[in-house]
Image 1 (cartoon, rainbow, N blue to C red):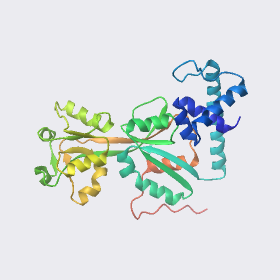
Image 2 (image 1 turned 180 degrees about the horizontal axis):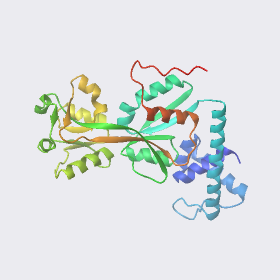
Image 3 (image 1 turned 90 degrees about the vertical axis):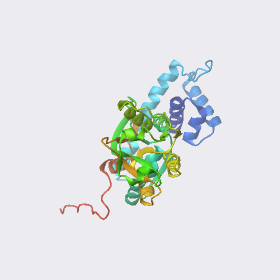
Image 4 (image 1 turned 45 degrees about the vertical axis):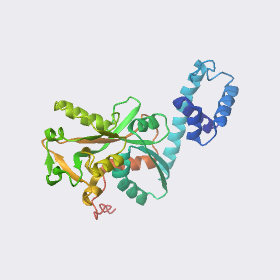
Length: 306
């Protein structure tokens, strides 16, 4: 059996979907089925219990899957170690990220990384938070970028930054003349929020509950860009990460206000499957994200003379 067969089989078990396994490996669903039958013929056992409506492994299939994961892990570890021995930083990094991080936090890191490692390819997908986690758990991507990361025994969580949340309004709004606003004043205003299952919405809802405030958004959106457009046209106020509105504030299409007496921060993190092998390129990218970017014009420390 080839390592590619084991990889396809592992993806099939993790995703429990022939179509998803096919997409992850760039083959057809028919090819996935053929590879599964070839494995069953090779080991002379039934791997998938076809009498069940849902995807389910037989006892023999579970044993093969357990061993397959170890084989793939050792293979990936060998490739990574060989690249490190040759000091090779190449390959592809596949990232799944929520919109606010991908559109506003990530670009300068990607730009700097590509300048330093031009032979690395980067694939970036913009997803809802729960789908980013699914992508990582199902091995559809190498790394995920999320806000308010939830603990999960299958995930490694690496904090890299904290967002400062601010109130935004239309320039014609009465609040636009102020630099800050109290939480109590927000209760009297039309409020625009993220969808209820988005972590930032959950965090702001908790803040309002702690303050004994009953605020029901008049509009809800699943991403930062559409939410900002609604505020720009005067539909209401919103609480968003400060980094996501820098351009609009500079162009005076939005006004940013601090929430008086309440500093709200939003933790951001990199996630990957616990125990997965990180390639040299992935390690370098994580190192860049966690160390932050140098100030514009700043120079790297000179190498010590031997």
